[in-house]
View 1 (tube, rainbow, N blue to C red):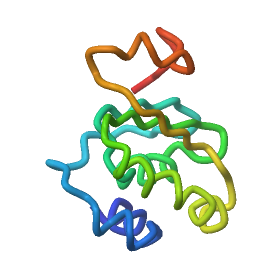
View 2 (cartoon, one colour):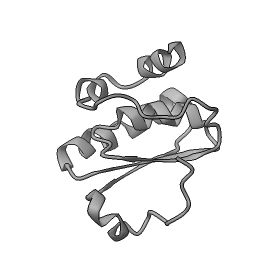
View 3 (cartoon, helix red, strand yellow):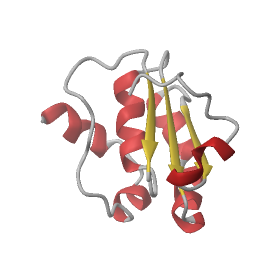
View 4 (cartoon, rainbow, N blue to C red):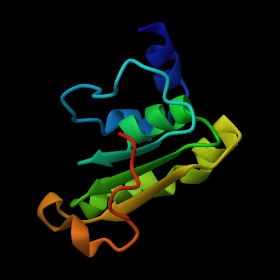
Length: 112
């Protein structure tokens, strides 16, 4: 969709270059103000797409087990803050089997 292509065009080239995912898995309804959790976020491409879709009132959290990928995601947060005009992302290292060990993830607080 055009709005997704426009969102991707706003993402830092390093993040786009490190994308190894299998496709964007976001619902087709309005995400404004929602809280989104991206499991296996890698370098954060989908997090930064969702960040634009949820807007300044929403939040997007990415979790990945790979320090090198998370370093790319975290090192470009300021770039995206400046580009989007708001900061609504967070990244944490962890495995899907042990999400309960990431204390910043409160159970039952995510919409997507």
